[in-house]
Image (cartoon, rainbow, N blue to C red; front, side, top):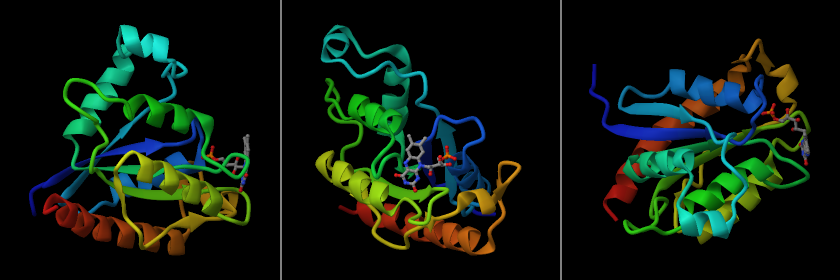
Length: 188
Ligand SMILES: Cc1cc2nc3c(=O)[nH]c(=O)nc-3n(C[C@H](O)[C@H](O)[C@H](O)COP(=O)(O)O)c2cc1C
């Protein structure tokens, strides 16, 4: 058995307990290559971003995730689409983590893999496009391909488990590509 080489943080863009996106992220964590360790973190208790609070200090839970992301070899974001865009909770978390401190920017040059599930037919294509624009601004390296757009997620997730064979196949393929992506970015 190969040793774990890369530690990756997984974030779900939905705060819903029985979230389809959370099920996809959990599938990824359970089916990642042996060299990849995915630790799922939550963003639901972050306060709304406010520069006045930031000036005093980062809230403790924000600080903890900032440090975990700074140390991580990469990040996986699995998110739904809300009104053709990124859910507010996810954008709020990205805004908190995007800010500079004495050690610089936690997101800087991070390899990132994104995916998403929606009950609609477009499979989060619009929110992923918008997410890529945000990730560009915070100087990360989102992996281009393969992509995963899970439409009609209510027919593909049962009892909080991803059961769709095609989605599972693409998710595993993505994770294997992500290992190579991390290795490529590390050389940069
Ligand atoms: C505020 C809101 C806006 C939504 N907007 C969209 C949308 O623009 N496109 C879409 O495909 N689904 C949309 N949906 C439906 C979500 O895809 C669906 O609720 C999905 O299950 C959310 O992901 P989750 O199961 O991980 O919580 C929206 C849902 C909510 C609550």
